[in-house]
View 1 (cartoon, one colour):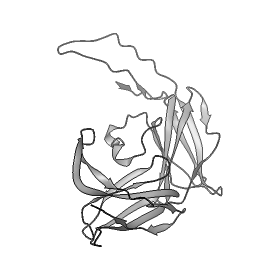
View 2 (cartoon, helix red, strand yellow; view 1 turned 120 degrees about the vertical axis):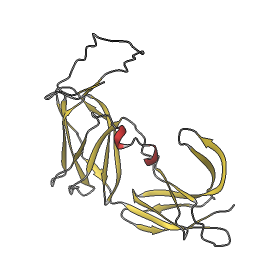
View 3 (spheres, one colour; view 1 turned 45 degrees about the vertical axis):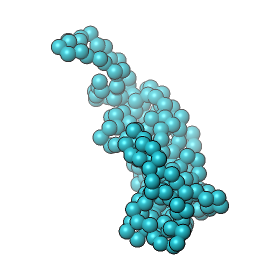
Length: 232
């Protein structure tokens, strides 16, 4: 159950089990006053990042895009806010807890910060700003050993931290990965033959080419072209 009341934080109960034809009463839900959480989003030089979207997520939640919850699945207490002209954002009547903050912006790389504590009834303020970097882009073509472009194959990129993304090449074998932070990256291409099935993702897993020496560095704001070759 999720309870809304003006002046209080959104409160979510534990799971309530109800059997067929059963009536259940006496459920007591204690509402908290809620709290505010504010902070600032800037670039490395201190300039504010205007119009960034800051989302409250489950602490240490995944940054893998296709594993993240759909918008319709988000609990209401996981709020969103946008930064103003000075880079500041604020969450009003935030539900107490420990969260991950996820920051997105069209021209900057995804940023996350874990272990953000919101204490009930307090004006919580981040002790340090959230620093975003200018996003980079990796484009290229998936090729066979003979140099033929490979259409409709899966290309995967692994980057700094636990960054992992994938995409499908177009009819010309081209792929693009956008809004990437600076750091070391590795590209790999699906072999095109299933080796298992992942029920959680509902899709076939495929072996991936990842030849040695395929690691390269992406600089902040760089648009890099890098082809990847399938050795199958």
